[in-house]
Length: 218
Image (cartoon, rainbow, N blue to C red; front, top):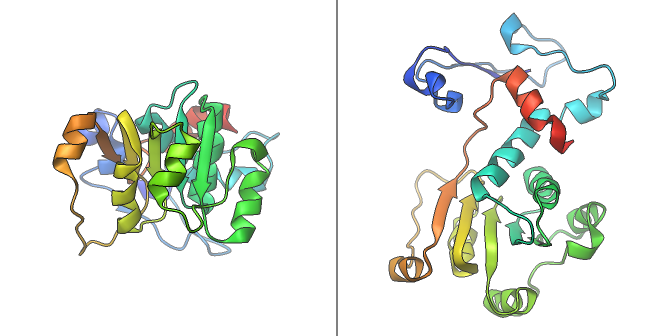
């Protein structure tokens, strides 16, 4: 089910950017036992797909969109800050996209163990007491990460990942950040390394398209 009804006719809907629809109708109460939604927003899952897996379809679409934007390719090194649901989904999609080394920085031990179930040899504890740059250099042979994805919504981490990126690296801010906070970015440093910074808000796929797009990642 999609919790947002797009108009299908505005500039953004016509250009495959439905998540920016100018006449979107949001729906609330999706966690209730019962709800009333437009028929076009409800999509029947395949019979062989368990409901507990299907429930992750919407957040999975965010993870897929983040990895798409990050342009992860075979052999890349990736750091993800945040081992919450979105971060762990991004971890799995990044691995399927071809990432050779994936580091997830997460201070909560239980979430660390959850991440290890996906790919034990590439999941690591956060940077303990050592400086982040020192730890990143050891993990990437001194080059920095090809892809840096922030999934906590902590602005300090959004800036830190810029400093941990490899030359021509992609930084993706996939968290939800406070609307009243700004961060200073090292413009010359970014210029000298040809870094790219992107953000993720929602996935630009209506409900049926979201399933077709994500089914290869499940």
